Image (cartoon, rainbow, N blue to C red; front, side, top):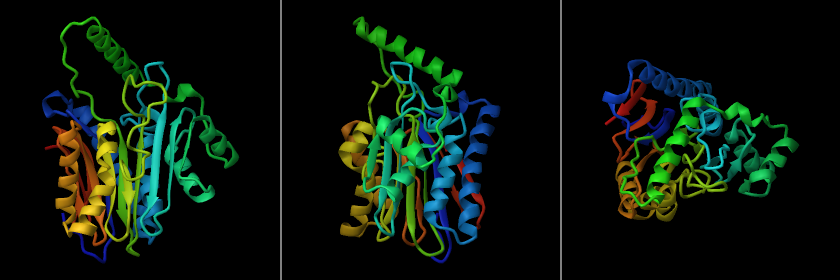
Length: 315
């Protein structure tokens, strides 16, 4: 997956987890593939006309936030209280500027608000009601909470609550990752050689209200530096935070001279040693792309060497 250094590069993901072909209906697989393709197309159109990597990753993630198949924006999971709380982050590899939001409940596209935080405030992260007030002040679309309701995610919450009740009763049971680690993200290199990364998520089903994972934490779930790479992660956020996975990819390349593929695999392995599973997508300063994961599947896509979209789900 090596890119010509004079060309654009783009990769997107829609989450990783136990995603098995035998349990996926052909119709649902087509829908997931279409979602990834739509995100790639949105980013590709911007890059093809000489647009910035920042614009490309924001556009790609916004498409996935609007697609109810993915756990971000419209398709976000529910907290244990039955609410939706979303996180997002974006980072500019050229300037190392970054913006993030967490625990927002009425922002249609959290990635748009994250970019506004980066460009229109002196802060990096704004959370909760403060983030929504900032959205209002900057004309960013807010919606009623019912916009985020999807029956599939509601049933997922009930299943998680039932599992929790069994666990609390003292009976033996196993928590599985049968539901994908829900996060979406995009990384890009534009024709000017600038890198950018963006990540958005609804978090984990049945999470405590106020819980924040790795996605909006710069250096954990999202990172971009023109000197090395742009990275967007998906997985067990608590472990990705502790292993600083996204920044580690950059550090291993910068300080130890590792290739993108080597650094990405090593960083993911470090989080796995702590107990976390998941994956990441990354693009380096030369346009090379890496998409490692240690689960049975990850919704992912990138622009191939021939300029065509490559979309994959399983190992």
